[in-house]
Image (cartoon, rainbow, N blue to C red; front, side, top):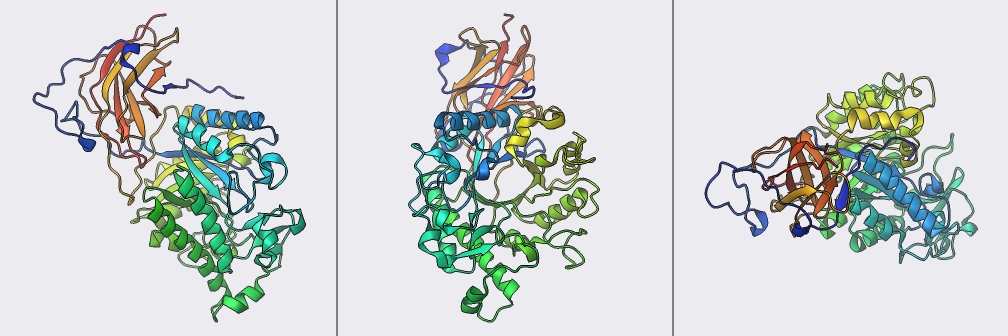
Length: 530
């Protein structure tokens, strides 16, 4: 990496008690037989409560764009692609992020073997060419190994950034059904007004939902394309055939609504725990146009992309919304402070989680964005709005480049410790059985630091590891601010433990929707001196 990454916890794949020295803490002050925990296991510390929600819980993510090699390595070499992708994930891990939003269907093509669409040109340089490996399978495995949530990012309607159908792979649905395609601007787009197009988009998404253990389905801001000058989107014939006398703008919004509602139903029917989230353009409507809108003077996604995000929130069709608030604090067109307040009010009283799309790509762009602290100001403002539960940065390559030191500053000032995402509301789930058999001792194999291990529980997806200074009770509540790692597997090596210092570690178990158990019995250890 191009910047100082800080200390990164090393994850151990599985716990083996013989590999470490047992150093459990003293009595917990609670007598009697431990109560049964979820899943039928016996809790080691029956009277200790789970941590619960707090401001320490937040989503921290980055978009990894594959189209045109924005973030995805441009080399057709499998080895270089995989090395480059791992480096981006290492950036996320070093910054204490906990999610990646990876573009796997950029142009009606696929980063996975699809029965519906050809392989993406952004893998090999030629659409339809088999890269020789399951790219999505590789991506997902690497992300989960680092306990990064994987949000599979689909573009529902874009076909190509160029306008020649003949340059698409012969197997492309756009080549087979040119009547589904419209030329607009410099590119090709599927017509959202056609039921066949919506069906194709849904099939592409549900193919991935069924085959891969992704954490969420994600759409960005591309529904109907952004306006190109004065030219209207060329769907006159489609409107005549399917409009049924509706106002044309309302009909277009209904087309987008239909896809969003249908996919929400299909995704949650197939896998109730899976999330569906959307990242719209940051302005829904301006107040001058609609009293419900924001006090802004920018393009309106309701009228430009026909995206009625507020309806999706109120209807509960989406699980999270990540508006792209790519303006600075004080911008005359669209003030970041105004918009973060407006979006916070829109999710109030709903179960839809709000995170904010942040413009890492703008750092260094003009006088305001040349200040490396601008994004930090955004995060400071977010803290005034409890509805904001995290941030997602566009894009990964910008974080890795660390222009003007902005990424390092974000980590130092706002992300010095890892974070567990907030609990996903309305999708069921419960805290797993607490972790058991915690042991701590010197790191094995000559490594520096403390090795902490536990027995993995069958119903847990991940574990939170907490550390306090000194010898503490074996059974005690944990402070969310003392989290040192959130990992999968059965152990970690904590290299930040200072030689000769005594610490007590506790471990909690988490399900895939971030419900957290109470801690199991803690372990006290003195870090080796060398």
